[in-house]
Length: 68
Image (cartoon, rainbow, N blue to C red):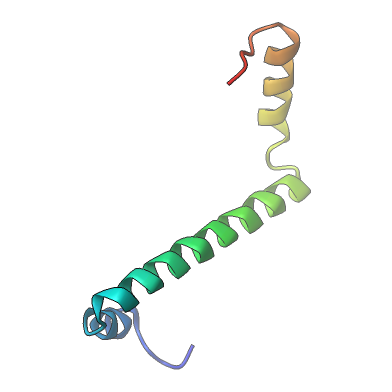
């Protein structure tokens, strides 16, 4: 980062016109989703979700799943 704090960034954002805030909001939402996807992929690779996935498989095999 270039030395700007979150407070500095907030001040700059507050000076943007509404259409640029909307564009930034869309970008930030997409960026956050990308970070989340990467975290889920990392958790899967590291086996951190194995217990949850085993429970889901168990419930599915027991007939407890319903179509969405």
